[in-house]
Image 1 (tube, rainbow, N blue to C red):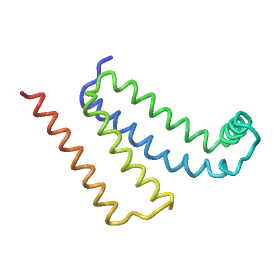
Image 2 (cartoon, helix red, strand yellow):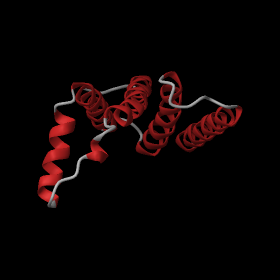
Image 3 (cartoon, rainbow, N blue to C red):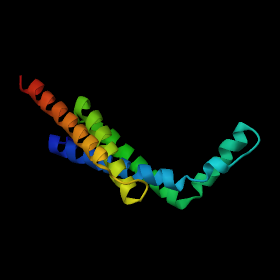
Image 4 (cartoon, helix red, strand yellow):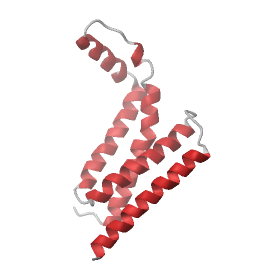
Length: 136
């Protein structure tokens, strides 16, 4: 199955939304894992794993995040790698910030908005630069 560039862009956007939306949720639902104290590193690992695995909210967020990773991996087969990585990572940062704001983790400030504008400008420059390279 061959994807078009617009299909690639759509799926990369989906990945950024999935990753960005779940990052603050993973942080929120993993609270308390740092309070687990066991003797020995193996016991510590299994205690933390059990705590997270049986927390259905964390597990659902984690599986959604990993679904984004699977989509990303599949999309990379047809996407231009030099565009896919910066676009997805930068949009993930923006969606993480927006999601954290919606969850009440922190408020968006003018500095955050200005930073998002810079990120989008950088992505636009990457895309325009790559377009010039492909045209010549």
